[in-house]
Length: 326
Ligand code: CP
Image (tube, rainbow, N blue to C red; front, side, top):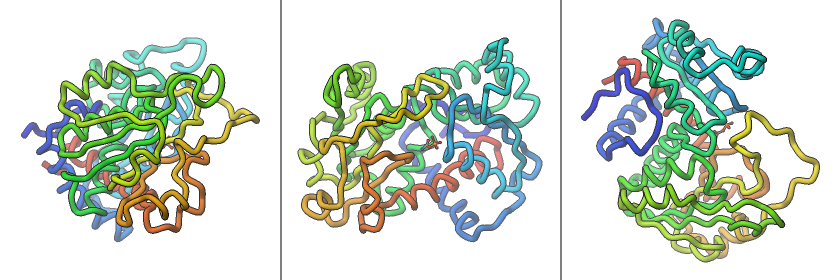
């Protein structure tokens, strides 16, 4: 197996099956530290740099919390407008990362441009972790989600997935690549163009990813309504269809946000009436109304466990790429 020490985490397209299981083995050890709410000194001589060109609650703070749990240090920015990359200069990724590599030992980057972390990795002497790039990928989130499935269901192979939401979303692309390494059929449910309101964009899985998924052997199909797939699903993963444009640095809230149509919504009634009794429901959050609040206390919801595992997975990846755990 390739070593993780010094490695960039840019895409799950690059992950091999045995590497997933190795990451999950290390995560189980890290979970003990996080569950005990302890801070250890594993990374006491290391610094994480956060380079966030787009808003984030979970990804940035989970990486920061993970670094603190492992005794490391954190510096960085969460608003690129206050850096030279976001002002008059529009400083390039190359020039920015040629600074950041001397400020710390690993960089986690979120960017509105697909491929920006890959560009950073070309120039950086320290590992780059992709914290979400435009409509590209979100590898650390899907590693978190697969680890949650493993912990909650005891296995990954043999489970049927239902993924609901905007398939331009970066999590969906990392998910497709990841599941191609497992025996996991998946149904994608998403709105085609104009399905939500006139001139709404096509939110079906983009052709470039479908082509890749076929080449990688992913067993997938597409459907129009969650009711066409929920009865068979062991894992239901939901993302919004009412959401901002992820290719923008930031979008202010509009007063006239639409409501999510029933096709893309997981309600308590649907779960009680149609879902398997032992299925689990994931959402990386933030949510709109696609999972109403009364679902939170049903036996299907696992998004708070997912949130906890988000810290565990970032502890794991930081420890591995920084060479503290082989
Ligand atoms: N799930 C996720 O990526 O959340 P943030 O946008 O808050 O980081």
